[in-house]
Structures are given as structure tokens and as C-alpha cells.
Image 1: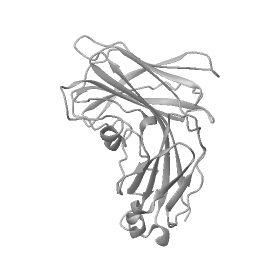
Image 2: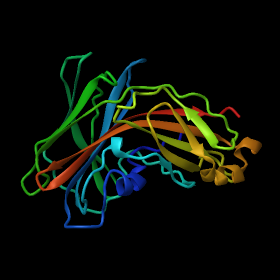
Image 3: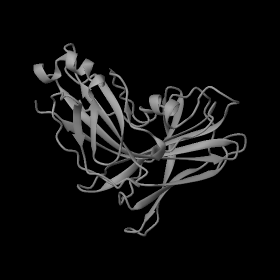
Image 4: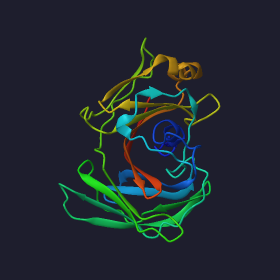
Length: 279
């Protein structure tokens, strides 16, 4: 089983410490969270964006963009395997009107627009997503989401961000050094607004598949060492000694927020790669 920890799943941590400065202060107001995953499409080599968007009313005070996130890790915890729509919000769904996503870039200069339509409900949140899969030029296309708004519902808005470049992750050594475990990937310049989420995932003796993770946020410069103090559970599980299933999930992401009328919107573009250990 390929466990993926999405940035929206990471929002349990990010929305309280990174994306949002608070979720329990002030008067409830419109809030939209739009998660755009860059994934292989039906063609053998193509990449397409797949969005999950929610439109709710909740207590939200602000947004912190990805470029403002500091490096750091969380202690080992159970893996959250949601589909990208599990945002830790409690508010009621709001009608957004018509929702669309548009791509355009410097390499592919055509305008590609698809509708985001209501689909499944996750934790009480109605999710809007696209079924059509437009071709994406990752790293050069912009991604814009337009919402027409609805009377008595969500206000109209448009939010735009950049897609994120694909990358190659290097094999990860299982053994813990004096500093920790080093991970490496294709870097971006220090001026990039992106960050890299690294999820070190492993099974325990009672599980055939990875069930626990150590999750970190790193500067997207291609090189990070997970500090030793966060690896006690990994070492205690005997991963590097007992050949337990384990893997590392890399997620490059870009977070942008905007004030919209009396509310807030945030859009995340991201691309994931999983390195499965052959240990």
C-alpha cells in the first residue's frame, strides 16, 4: 500500500502553525482551501493538476505562505492517509457558485480551463474537484481558480499561483548517523517560494504496511537531515535492523493566500514522490 501524506493532511499541523495563524479566534467567516496535486494523467508521460476545494465558514485569522515556513519536524505519529480534502475545519459548507481552474504558461501558452464540480463529502466537507485532466507544464504554468460566488453563500474571488517543478528524490539510507537521517532531492534556488515536506514512514511489528511517520518541512534546496532526536520511535521499532516496511514520501509544495471580501482563500500546488526502501 502506498501511503501518501498530502499537504492537506499535513494541514493538521500546517493550518495551525503555518498556513493559518489561528483557527479558534474571531468571528466565523468564509474560508476556502484549495489543494492542487500534480499527478500523472492518462497519457504515459503527461502530468495534470487534480484539485480538491472546500468552501466553508470558520474562525480563521490569517494565512502564512510556504516561503515563510521554517524548517522543522514533528515527533512520530500515526500516518494520516486522507485524499487531500481532510482539512481540520469545523464550519458549515457555503455555496460558491461556479468554480473553475485555468492553466496558462510560458511554455504552453494556450489557456486550459476545467470546471471544479461538487463531489464527495469528507468529514462533513463538500469537496469540489475536476474530472477533466488538462495537460500541465509543471514549473512554468500558472494555476488560477475562479469562483463566481453565490448570494447568501461564498463571495466571488480569483486566486492564482505557480505550479511546482517535478523533482527526483535520491535513495535514503536507513541507518541513523550521529546527526540523523539525510535525504536529498533535485534542488530549487533559495529564492523559490516552495518548501519540501518529507514524511519518513514505517511499519511497526504489528503492521504489514507503513503506519507511523516522522514529518518534516525543509527549505527546498535539495538537502536535509532529519535530526536524530526525532528518530527515537524509528529506531525503537527496529526499522533498520528488522527489515520492516518503510518509505519516504517527498512533497514539494507552494502555498499562497489571499483576502477575499470578508474571508480568506488559500491555494496549495504540490507534487509528490515516494521512495520505497528495498532493505
